[in-house]
Every structure is written in structure tokens, then in C-alpha cells.
Image 1 (spheres, rainbow, N blue to C red):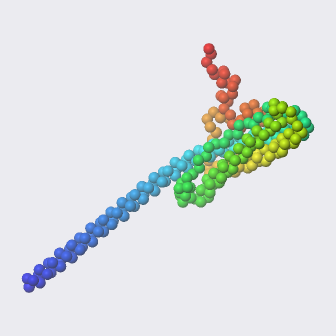
Image 2 (cartoon, rainbow, N blue to C red):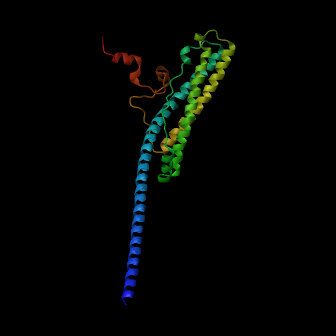
Image 3 (cartoon, rainbow, N blue to C red):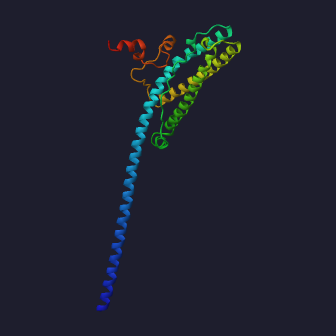
Length: 247
């Protein structure tokens, strides 16, 4: 009988140890899963904050781009008219004022866009349509930069009919007409790109925001006077001189 009792107690202890081991195993597994869940939650929150910061920066840049788009919308007809005037003067063999060959400064706002991870989170949290608009802004921003660069190169080529460069031949005038026509094409592409950016900004609920102190020319005469599609009134030479301290 005593032997049976010892055997029973031995088995009971074994069962107790097995149960204790199973309990400790479950506690360890639960702890690991909990720690992993907390880590994942923290990482998700950090990624969410990074997305919001990235999105806020992109929105501010798009606001500046939309404001510049308004400036370009006003300036491009003036520049197109200038190209037509140059083409007509070249055809008529008239002397072209060198001042007419000076290109106004075309402002292109910086745009860093959304990172791939932020774009994915915007797609997941806000919607695929919103994410697509941010992608389209990045595409048209690159297109705009290429067109503005081409515009600068083409405008520089117009110096071929400047009286300051020497004798102007008939072939020079013909080449100037071709260049001016190409510039008009670039202007149309720039206008289309900036119009797209304006639409995306509106659809994203982003208002145009011009930099502090900057202004947009109200008419062609002001554009050519400032020689820039966006200008700072305080940067006019006469104003700068008036602000200098007297000797």
C-alpha cells in the first residue's frame, strides 16, 4: 500500500511539474507575442507620424507650386506675345532690341514629394485616389522642370539676332524664327504642366501660398519691368538704394 502511495505521489509531482512547465511556456510565449505587438504598434505609430510630417511638407510645397502656377498662367501669354513679335521682326529684317531677347526669370518651386513608404500609407489610410494625385504632382513637377530648362536654352539661342553679337544674316533670322516657334511650344507645355498642378492642388484641398513678400506681375508691362514671373517689391534696385543708410 505504501508503495502504491509513493508511486501516486511521484506521478502527481510529475503532473504538477508538467503543468508548471506548460504554464511557464505559455507565459513566455504570451510575453514574446505581447512585446512583438507593442513593438509593431510603436513602429506603426512612428511610421504614421513620419507620413504626416512628410505629407505636411509636400502640401506646403504644393501650395507654393500652385501659387507659382498662377504666376505662370499670367506670364506665359506675355512671353508668347514676345516670341510672335520677334518672329515678325526677324521676317521683316528689322533690328531687334536686345532687351526683347532677355528671358524673364521663371520660378520653379522645390518639391521633394512623398517617400514610397509615406505614399503607401496615404494609399492605405486616406485612399488610392489621393495617393495617385501626389504621384501625378511629382510627374508634372519633373515635366515642368524639363520644359523650363528647355525654355532657358531656347531663349538663350535667340541671341543669334541680337545686334550686340555682330552682323545678322538672313539664315540667322530664319533660325531665330525656328527657335521662337520652338519656345512657343515649350511655353504651351509649361502651361499644361502648371495647369495640372493647379488642379491636383485644388483636388487635394491645398490653397496657393506665395512666399512672404513675393508678388505676381499684374500685366505684361510689369512682368518685363521686373523680368520675373514672381518678384519681391523690395528687391527693385530703386527700393534697395532708398533703404541704404545715408553716408
